[in-house]
Length: 97
Image (cartoon, rainbow, N blue to C red; front, side):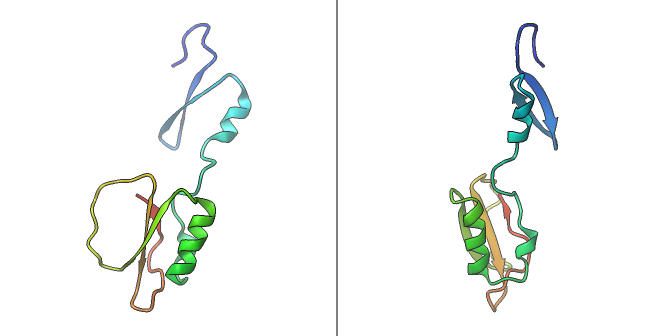
């Protein structure tokens, strides 16, 4: 929490602690990066979904995998996996992780 004479405030937004300055405009800068999941891409071709994700987050590493593929369980803030069926269609919402 902020101490006396300190202009910073601690906010908890969606379970995440965020340090802000005294300027109220700072709150609008929270979560301005790419989305964390893309449910609207289910049903699209995998390559099209990949392009849409990279438009919003060019710093992300996006990989297309067949559904049911074995993957590591580590969490990476810059990785998105797109799972596709035999026809190359996205079968579940891609998300960061």
